[in-house]
Length: 218
Image (cartoon, rainbow, N blue to C red):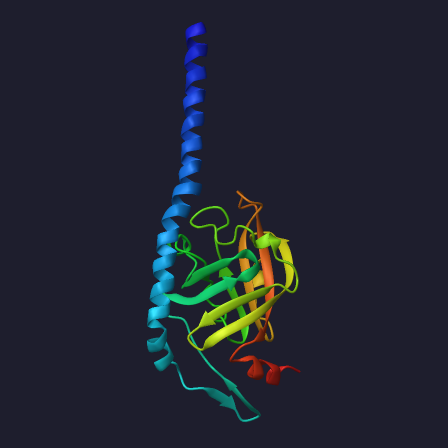
C-alpha cells in the first residue's frame, strides 16, 4: 500500500510539472515566436503598400451622393490586409484575412463576410488573449472614447470606442451589419478561458471614407 501511495504521489508531481511546462510553452514560447512573425508581417505590409495603392479599384460615387467611397477589398486567407494600432495599449499588429486557427496564431484576423476595415458596415477582427502574441490581452482596459487606428492601402481610419460588452460565444449578432462604419474587436473572456467573449465596438470618426459615411447617414 505504501508503495502504491508513493507511486501515485510521484505520478501527480510529474503530471504537475508536465502541465506547468505545457502552459509555459503555450504562453511563453508562442508569444516569443509570434513577435518574429508579426515583425515580418508588418514590414512586408509597409513594403507592399505602394503596389496595393496602385491596384485599388476606381473610386465609387452614387447618383444621389457626390461623396467619394474609396473602396478596398480583402485578398486570400492569410494575406496581411491592414495594420491595427491601439495607442492606449501600445499595440501595433498586422491584421490577416481570415480567422481560422492557423491564421490567428499569426495575429488578429478579419472575420469572413464582414466589412473590410475602413469600409461601410461592421468590420470584425478576432485575436488571442493569452497565447500567440496575446494581441488582445488588455482589451478590457479600453473605455468609451479611446482611439483605435487602422491603416489600409487607402489610408488611416480612426475609430473611437463606444462600448464594451461580454457575451456568449454563440452571440453571433455582434458580427451583424451596422449602419455607418464600425470596427468590432473580439477575444476570449475571462483571461485563460474561452467561456465568454469580450467585444469592443468602435465607430469610425475620421478617414478617407468619412465624408461618404456622413453623406449616407439619415
